Image 1 (cartoon, one colour):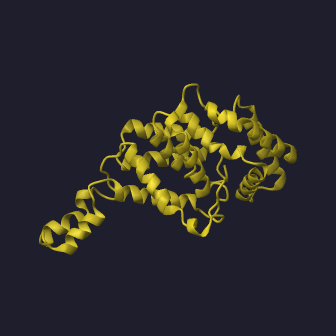
Image 2: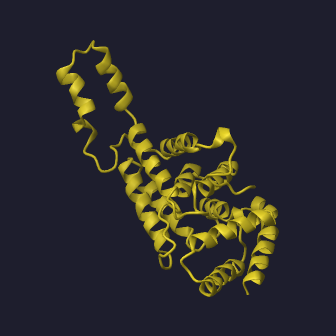
Image 3: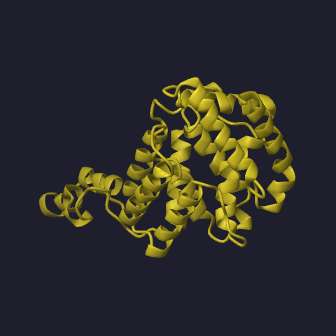
Length: 268
């Protein structure tokens, strides 16, 4: 389990975006999206690409039929791609050092590896995409998670997901504020376990994660950062268990707690 960053991949993997967008589109389809319009645009029937070929070009004109097929297929693909690209842009904001597309990819990888254990894996995947989509280190409390949940709701409604699916993704995103999951909530357990997977990495990987978090809070003076970070670590250590799925508890609980105790000792 290695925490990935945008700039530490081999040459053939320097641009992870196409594969990430494929994963996003697959999750949107799997979650039951209906034909939808791109966010912020009018209904598909009013777009030029859908009306011009019928009104101004003969049916046999090849360029017009090619344009129609490539820009307005009868699916969610154009809107889904636009939404996914917007999320990727958020995950690549310059103030992020840990909460990057490397973290997003790592969370998705865990969800994929244990998808068979949950009821609605595609909803968990969509929640993973959205859970840190809004990330402002200066925000107070759970504002980032609440804003991320609101963003998820708006995006997924525009993509035509059923109302119940949208509500579930919002619920899952909000869970990542405190990682407190009720018994029997396997979807929530998988998302939260995946989000905290970095805590169980080898010490050198954990130290890189902690250093990246510090860079995100560079605006906070050292004494205040140490006190605030120590509160976060104590809150995690106070959880009855950091992980909930038995397979991940067995693998990750002990090394994660060891890393947290080690960082806490260094801070205090």
